[in-house]
Amino acid sequence: GENVEQHPSTLSVQEGDSAVIKCTYSDSASNYFPWYKQELGKGPQLIIDIRSNVGEKKDQRIAVTLNKTAKHFSLHITETQPEDSAVYFCAASILWGSGNTGKLIFGQGTTLQVKP
Amino acid sequence: GAGVSQSPRYKVAKRGQDVALRCDPISGHVSLFWYQQALGQGPEFLTYFQNEAQLDKSGLPSDRFFAERPEGSVSTLKIQRTQQEDSAVYLCASSLYTSSGNTIYFGEGSWLTVV
Image 1 (cartoon, rainbow over the protein chains, first blue to last red):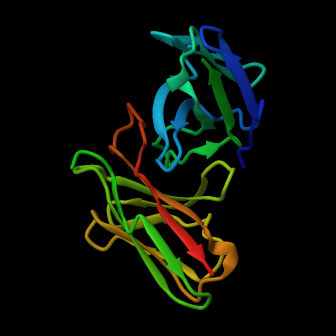
Image 2 (image 1 turned 90 degrees about the horizontal axis):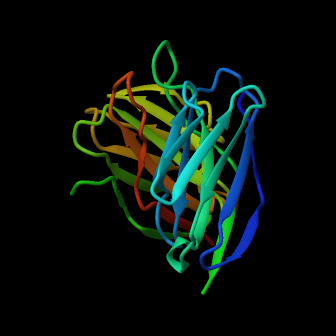
Image 3 (image 1 turned 180 degrees about the vertical axis):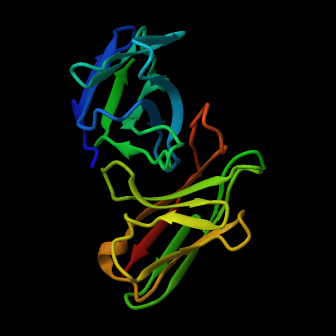
């Protein structure tokens, strides 16, 4: 089955700096890669996602890149702010259809701390 | 409400007790998932429903775990004879039944502590 590895486990940056979190996946059939932000005591919240037919996607300060050949995808946050501090999870799945449920396989999480 | 709603938010159970956790998915969402999240870990898949049909229960850790969604909307996750290792956050998630998108929305979770 699918296995997702996420690095680093913790990341501390100064406000205004960029942050990069990296994930690798094992199943070449995976074609959907969302990123979730989880604040303490809350459920994961989708912040950005990318499908395998796209190499890069950007939404304001957040961007995700995907390298299908290397089975590697990354989250980039620019101009970090203290409110970006949270745990970030990458995930991989096979989009629903053709017998697939679309279930997500998560990485282990990265705790991002943005220092003011 | 507009999001996935879970209850109770917090539950303390004595070892050996049975617990039931409820999930109200987003209205109209056909797909419903249950995940288990241990402290400091990523969520792990437990089971999946498409309407009332449980199509995947490969992640349920033992036969003490049982989930149902009898009318295709509200779902209940039941844990029988709870053990300390069952202590975790149980997350419910739902998504729209469409081949063009797979955005999965999570609830706030039910925090279970077994003492």
